[in-house]
View 1 (cartoon, helix red, strand yellow):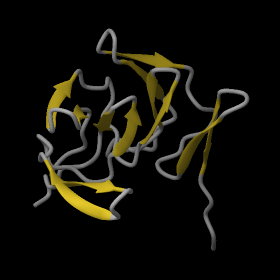
View 2 (tube, one colour):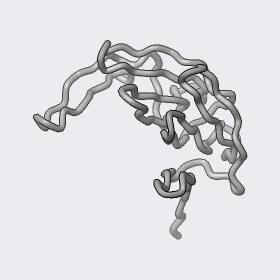
View 3 (cartoon, helix red, strand yellow):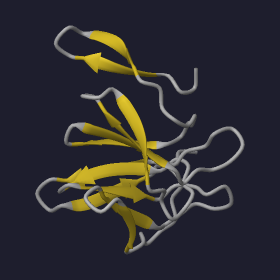
View 4 (cartoon, one colour):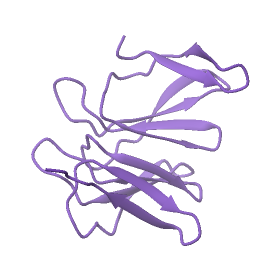
Amino acid sequence: SPLQVEHYNHHTATWHPAASMLNKRCRHGAASLGSKMFVCGGYDGSGFLSIAEMYSSVADQWCLIVPMHTRRSRVSLVASCGRLYAVGGYDGQSNLSSVEMYDPETDRWTFMAPMACHEGGGWCGLHPSSHHLRRGWDVVG
């Protein structure tokens, strides 16, 4: 099922079923923040998504959070200092340079400074000593 979710127990090295997501999607961003898992954006087979969900492992339940301002497939989602950052992606027409920050305390997405170049995929990470986001994409050939 496209909604099916499993979680991995590293103590027992086994996978276990978890509650299904509320919306089917692929090419989404995912990140954990505290004890919660967040999933945003993606593609559902017919359209590009701005919707976002939060999973509680304690309750084994997904709930919707406020959607992003921009539809984003192939989005990178990074957690830092109690916030989430949705970086780049593809909206169905063009690669995105925009960045949105999610604050779970206010359930609100805010636009941040855009990246200098448009990228629709690739990786994104946080440099721990500087708190700078790094994003990249290598094209070979």
